[in-house]
Amino acid sequence: MLGRWGADGRRRWTAARTPRAPSPPPRDRLARVPSTRSRRQHRCPTSTSRSAQRGLRGHEPAGPCSAAPVIFSTALLDLPADTEHLADVLTRQAWPFHVRERWTRDQALASAADGSWAGPHTQTHWLRADGERVGLVRVDDLDDGTPLFDLRIDEAHRGRGLGTAAVRWLSQHLFDRDPELQRIEANTRIDNEVMRAVLQRCGFVKESHHRSAWPDQGGRLFDGTGYGLLRADWASGTTTPVRWDA
Picture (cartoon, helix red, strand yellow):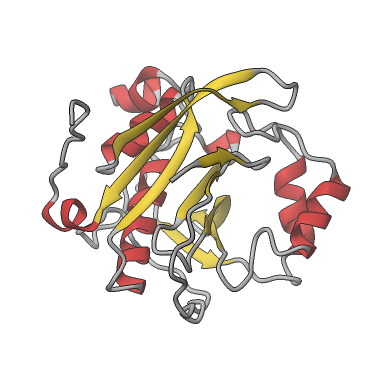
């Protein structure tokens, strides 16, 4: 089975998979979902804690986090109603480690109209902290048995643990949504150390390494890495290592 990196940084496989009828999209909702197996609210580290001062594993600047707990919640992207707000989010800052680091408004509006963010096999969810929109997560390939996701946290809110909360919420959402789903995938650039740490923290295991396979917007090539989370690992809270010598 062969694959390639698409223009959006997503790995595409050429082998056909048996499609499934898509499940109806969930209704908009707010939910406290901090971890894969727990319903405790996600708590932001206090301003005096080491994680607040250094960010995620020291790789990310600490965000404006207070001692008060953060209530993490989600809501389904509603298009076309959310088109202008989606364009605002994509264009107001750079998105490092994505193939398209900077968006023009025309590009953002076109992507909202062409099904890139919502469709029969694609869902996007707003991420909220204390009711404020702080990012979004898009899930593709909901029909082929191995969904792939793209996570974006607003730069003003990075370093607060929201990426970890989002990935844990998404894992539970996808496995609960489809009882037959056995795995979830994520791809990122080799130098995106924060995202790689988040994936490992959430039970994902590195499964692939693609040399000089991920172009940035200027055409430079970086190595790409692929991670996977198995339902069995998610349910048991363990990780199954890859047999690289097999």
